[in-house]
Structure formats: C-alpha cells, structure tokens
Image 1: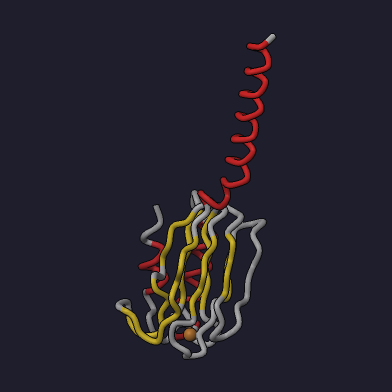
Image 2 (image 1 turned 90 degrees about the vertical axis):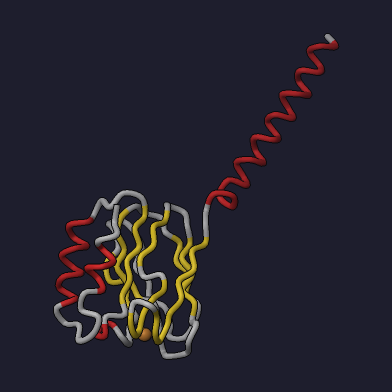
Length: 156
Ligand SMILES: [Cu+2]
C-alpha cells in the first residue's frame, strides 16, 4: 500500500511535468525572426534584410522599421489557408506563420523598385504559384529586377 502511494505521487509529478512541458512547448520551439526594412543593403537599394528566410510553422516574423524611409511589409502571396497581412509604414509589423508554404511580400511604397522578400515555411507546397506570381510582379519592377529570382533560388 505504501509503494502504491509513492507511485501515485510519482505519476502525479510526471503528469505535472508533462503539462508544464506542453505549456512551454510553443515558447521553446517557436522562433522570432527579425527582418530589417532598409534604404540600402548588401543586396542593393531598398531592401529587406535578410530578404529570404526559412522558418517553421509557429514562428513569428518581426519586420523592423530600421530606417524611416516609409517602408512597410505587405503580403503579395500566401499559401492557401494562411492570412494575408498589411503593415503600416515605419511601424514594426509582426506576422505569425501558421501555414506551410512560400510567402511573397513587398514594401507597399517601393514594390516597383523591387523591395520584395520571400519566406519559406516548411515545404514549398505552393512553389509553382509563388514562382508565377513573382515573375508577374518582377515584370513591373524598374529596379532590382532579379531580386525575386535570387530569393526564390534559395528555396530548398
Ligand atoms: Cu520601402
């Protein structure tokens, strides 16, 4: 009977530890990925840095208004079931990635200047649609015409 009592206490402890582990899991495993919005970067003028990131479902992207050049982050294409977003200029914009696939985004003010970026979450399940959309957008760019191509080439 004494052994039984001990084992119940131990079971209780294990359950408690399990519940704590479950409660902490999102905080432990979900990452924050910071992307700067810049007037100028190594990849050329008007850029997100980094302009290609790989993330996992549950991660949060934080677009930082590093230079107050009126930059923003607005989604152009998101995987089916994912939420589109539209950040205000010169404001921090947080986007939690809840769906696997490729995300294309741009700065609303400088999209035509090729201020665009790509996020890969898990497997690139919508690669074909994303490539097609990126090609269509790139045709209208007057600057950084190959930026989407360079970003999409990094998808694995
Ligand atoms: Cu901009």
